[in-house]
Length: 211
Image 1 (cartoon, rainbow, N blue to C red):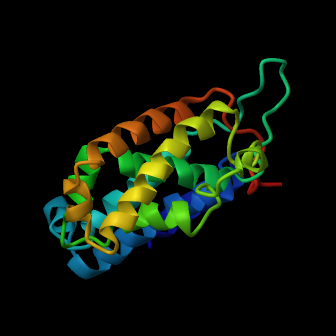
Image 2 (cartoon, rainbow, N blue to C red):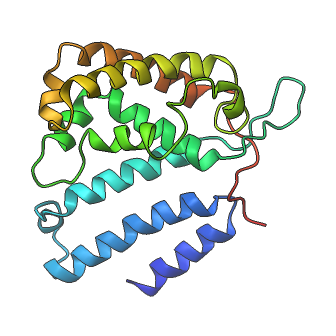
């Protein structure tokens, strides 16, 4: 990778950008560098024709979403909102987006050149977090949730998805997207995504803050 690019990435890590966000940006640059070494040209067309370009756009979308989250918001009384696991909150927002966005699903989940699928949000919700656990709303308050409204919007998505998983099992993304329940899942995921992402009570001190 270009030394100037590496220097810029180091500056990112010294800024207020949390380490996790800087790593997301770095991953995009590193992948572009790998493609550059393969195509050996400065023509943009050669980059976007690479089978790996979809992965660049996917990682860039994740980085943009993470960077859009405001870590400086405060409660109404001026005290900071301390969410213990903002990186998990970022993952929750990203996976809600995947479940909610028609264009994303058709562009990435149905594209044979990418590894993205409906399995990604399913694994996050049911395997990689406690979001799906009943009765955990209080425990997750100020951990990934900033207020009581957020789990009330997220849990209906979880319940609908759980029922669909039990019905369809390990079928592919196309089967899930064709299910009659899918439009409702997408709509509820959109409502949850929009609220959690734009919730001005959002995030305070990140778990990966630079000290």
